[in-house]
Image 1 (cartoon, rainbow over the protein chains, first blue to last red):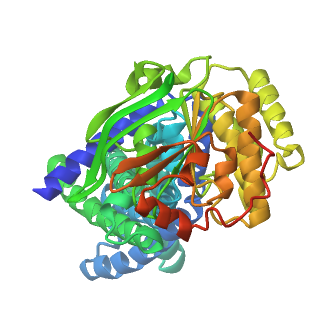
Image 2 (image 1 turned 180 degrees about the horizontal axis):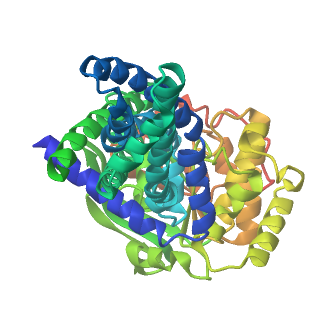
Length: 249
Length: 257
């Protein structure tokens, strides 16, 4: 019951933040900061993890496919796995680790330091001011980061498959372009949007409500909020992935 | 007494703990009223109820004859906001400079244009002797300077009532006096009504027009600071005697009121 109640609270929280954003002044400047925080700062980790994921997948799938004499399907296997599943999921997990935890901690400290109360006394909507720009930035950045992850991952698969293990590069790329459909890409973007909204909402909600949700006050409460934000976001991403995949397939 | 801020039957409880148990208070316009009482007795809760940061369980708060919610609806008007709050720990935004912190309520919640905001904030920073530190971040400012930035932010919207929650906590005696002087000075200059929570007895009485003693969830004494020494309530006398009232002379004496 409490989970349902909390889901309702998070939904209202996110709605309030999105609605609040559109009543803010200097929206573009705030959105730019949000894009910097969630998009640009996460880019290096997304690119690195994407590359290594592609490299490992190239290796593993090659040695599996070669047993069946089907190594020419490497491009298909790498691209579809990344675009449909691993890209959106790993991107979400990386952004949670990089930006989500930082956001939960920052909002928790701002709550403890009474900065959020201060905004209220200044007649500034704290949700619209602090959370709204980040949520909108998330909706913009997540699909782009996922696309970057997918592209670099597919390139990583090419490096191990074609450059290292001698799968013909023409075959590899031909299989990628031939088998990946718009529906696969669309499915990946739907997941990216849902994961982005869910993870950043949970992280922001946990940090913003540190005073109500954490078992301890002060610094321990902030650390607990950040930890729970990361854990719950990650679990929710995996659960949501299963649900969305069930609907898409 | 012509009351500007009128509080009646204010109640607030947390679980079984009745923190505020029917507070009645009348505050005159452009006066300084200091709330004293033991730590944890509910002084900050009282201020937060007035500032709408906490929802009272019962009671009414009227400002200039209007209910508090109606008054707060005027918050974004050009006349200035109804209430402003200066937090105990300043609550400044670390990522904003002193200028940006002071300008924040105007940028986000007023209809003033950039030039007007710039002029008003520059003027405020000059009053607070912070012009040279306008571009510095809170982490680069001393404790006293942070207090002044917080005061500037609280006053920039020309509020009718300013709530000060232990504004001198953590300051050395010299800085305490300068903060009290500042409050008294700006009250004179801007004409706001101040409600102040402080443990700095008797120093704070020098700038206070009225003192309210909060005990067991109610205002047990309300009057001029001079009347404290003649009040017969034994509990209040014991409290004041522990706070050294009557035994110290204040360096602020005669400076402010």
